[in-house]
Image (cartoon, rainbow, N blue to C red):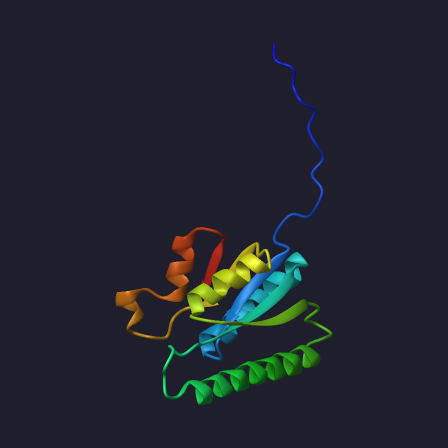
Length: 153
């Protein structure tokens, strides 16, 4: 008979501690954020809302205006989130943070999920028909197999 190790007490919580939700201002990403907020509330998890600012390739003639525009999108998302959180504070008891990363959406969300030690990722379904051929961010995140990924229509 083998010596059996005593069962160690598991510290921590059941369920996710950090839920990352990708935002880009689209309707599906806003629904994904709302869904993630509900998960975070029920699980008492931190909701990390992430906007990935697109980066133009080197030498692009519109690099500076695009950077300014994406910064404005990020600021607009923060403002919208804060206003919603204030209106819903009595029902929406969720700890949340807003983060921006630079790059393409897939790599930005991977970086965010890794850096924030995400336990789950929630994204909106792609609204682009071209993604049927090249693969959407959601499909690529699922294929990465690093976290449970929820795709919200």
